[in-house]
Length: 352
Ligand code: CUA
Image (tube, rainbow, N blue to C red):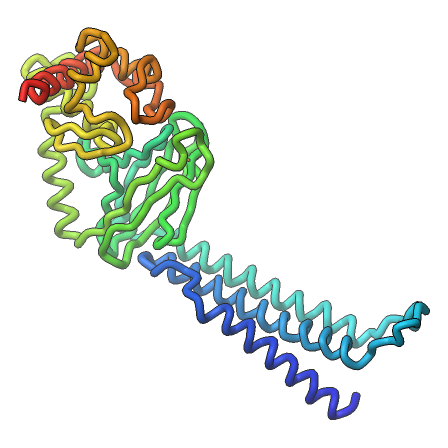
């Protein structure tokens, strides 16, 4: 090979590599990192990109050089000369890709195992997914559920995820991790948040008509603030009777409020009696007027709307978004409490 061609090839490779590097680095491709795992995943990503740029530069240089120097005459339809094996070249183009692919496998295996390694004091959060909402509960505290994933900063957190109906998937872009939630399985995801703030949490598996509405938030808090939030929630949920034969001492409306909170109703509905501000479904402070529009008495209307949500759809709100299984999920007693609570608070706000 002439010295001149080597210089030309090198020059072409540098140009191709420079362009590819600029495309990789100048736009911001990845969201800000908010977990320890995200940093490692970003490392793997850039490691693979660097290898790709290296290979791309070689291929682009050889291709452009060949097009420029080995062009045939326009009327030349002959086959090219038969070239037989070049052992040295074949060994080279087998060994180099083998080393590159193996290094990617090793780096990925290390990153995966370190990302899954839980710390001693890992916090457990149970995630329940259903069409079309997430509910997060904290086994460390009694009866605490939240429609929003609250996490303490710098603590190892393991999500244990279940689905009540179809396949969903949980994804917080800033945490870089995504995991399917499959009916019949408990899938796990390990996160160590490193940045305070509120990040979008979304379902990333097409799970029905309300899929695009199946969104929540991950809120990363200072550990002290998280602990006091958890304690406060535990206190608020304390009078809740989950499987009650002893609920006689609790007022039906307090029990109803607990059912309301435990089932994540506030993710979609506004209700001042529960300090809920969801906007997906009908505003429950207006139940009296909705019942009038549906031409039904208030109490049976509320009950029907929980058990069979598609029986009447309030104009302006989407059909098929409210889960249709509350008739099975709630016990008879829980349903009664919830209906009583909603009717009472609706009458209060309806009379304003
Ligand atoms: Cu759940 Cu998409």
